[in-house]
Length: 228
Ligand SMILES: N[C@@H](CCC(=O)N[C@@H](CS)C(=O)NCC(=O)O)C(=O)O
Image 1: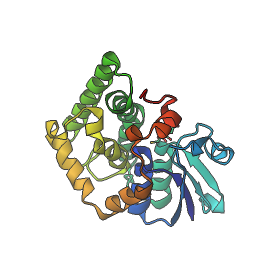
Image 2 (image 1 turned 45 degrees about the horizontal axis):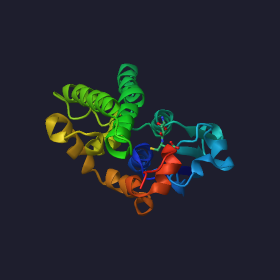
Image 3 (image 1 turned 135 degrees about the vertical axis):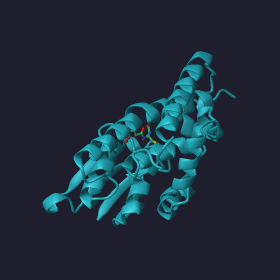
Image 4 (image 1 turned 60 degrees about the vertical axis):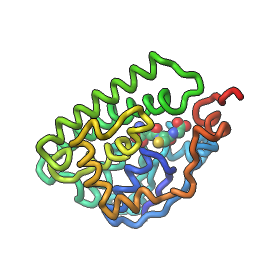
């Protein structure tokens, strides 16, 4: 059994989707990042970086308990554990890994910043907004080109798609229009209709807090509140 420590958010969604796709048995442990639960002593022991999600696999390799944070590592671990969503040949594996790293080091962090300055920030900062919204457009164009002649990022549906999908899902909050990226829009639709993806996106849906409307959540996550 796997203990999943998570919240309703893009990085959480990557792992929710993978767990649903693989059919692994897991238990959801909500970590209310809008209320500071990621800084509790218990969670800090699971992830010293205080970010969700994290997993504890009580049935790891040779019966060991495996505790992991960082979604890139978690997705790779679950793919290796189940033999799913990662090609079996070495070249194919490296191709998926490079796109997974592209998401971890580019698409995710840049869209996170674009979302912050475009959607969440109380004090509007034109320079920062433009910088991250522009970089997000550039990255979505990279994805657009990659999807020009294939249905999924690395041909077959893989953990690279699962890593990118939840970020593309919030494109509007990052100042984007998915219709400007037709290949990405079709790819998004293809993934969105998978039953496991729908189930993954439903996890902790009831716990969702619109940060823009909650000064308390905003203070907790960004260290500042809207001046009223
Ligand atoms: N690189 C990390 C990023 C994780 C991350 O930023 N998680 C966000 C939620 S989507 C979080 O925990 N935020 C809480 C905070 O910043 O205090 C990963 O891929 O696991």
